Length: 367
Ligand SMILES: CSC[C@H]1O[C@H](OP(=O)(O)O)[C@H](O)[C@@H]1O
Image (cartoon, rainbow, N blue to C red; front, side, top):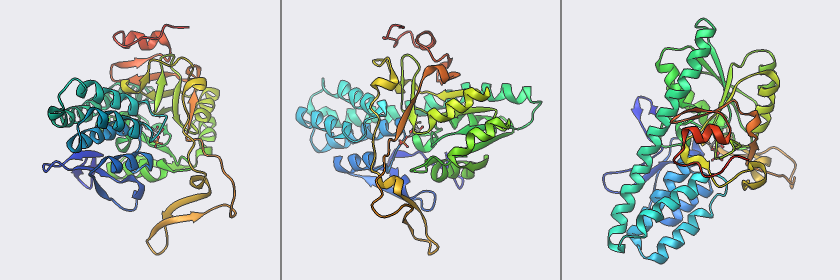
């Protein structure tokens, strides 16, 4: 999307072959663009969240394989790269999907052909993500348009959680794509942006996206969402996902489950923007089977921001040595999900709903 009138993707390859990313750790205060030149860079970028968001993690891993193939295209290097990058973060299925896809394409080729083929496939994966997200936006736009018409053109209030924006993907975003399309369609839309503790992807990234794209928004603390729903201030929720099961259970940033409970209790539609590479067809029960990343407790006891001096740094918000738990995701059972907004349409959160849209992929029989 655009930053001060200039179009950016979150990851791209320069004409000289260098792969570059926006290092999201410094947003919203600094726009830092960095080159990733070796496998270690790519592993750090994913593990330490220079880039984050399920689709972007997958795209980054794809380019990580390509850059490694340019250094060493042996079978051993290909297998080792799968292991090294797969170990960076456990929850987003797109990481495994992208690594498996790159291996599928490259394994049959002679090493001499692998680097060129890898960069081609990585570029395709990025372009496919952009198109998938554009279509998710068009499908989600109809949900927002229907609410707008029901409200006689009055403002449609959308709640988002974490960042499922263009910064979480290659472009458009997933949960934000319907919002961007609604803005372009002239619909009066307002976004309540969950700050999303502890990494504050909402406060730091979604608010930055909304601001740069001219979307009306308010930043709210995570705990305010239920109150706003009780008072009729939220028309629908749209969130992203890091892994959705064939049953329609949705794994997403920590706190999503609580938002879904509040939405159910208040009759607020709760939608999940779901690109098909984020569907894990091999999993039945999301709560029992999806690995939940446990990140360092320091992300809970400390918060990053800009100091009065203008320097971006960390401040400690709890007593020295405070122990902290930091599960980075939770799973919202399908029963709390109103619908899944995919690139092929809006599906019921059920095996039947997903199989209807993806008969070519559905492999898990309904319970
Ligand atoms: C479009 S996927 C976005 C998804 O990824 C985020 O997690 P993280 O920032 O830790 O990578 C969050 O769960 C978003 O909903």
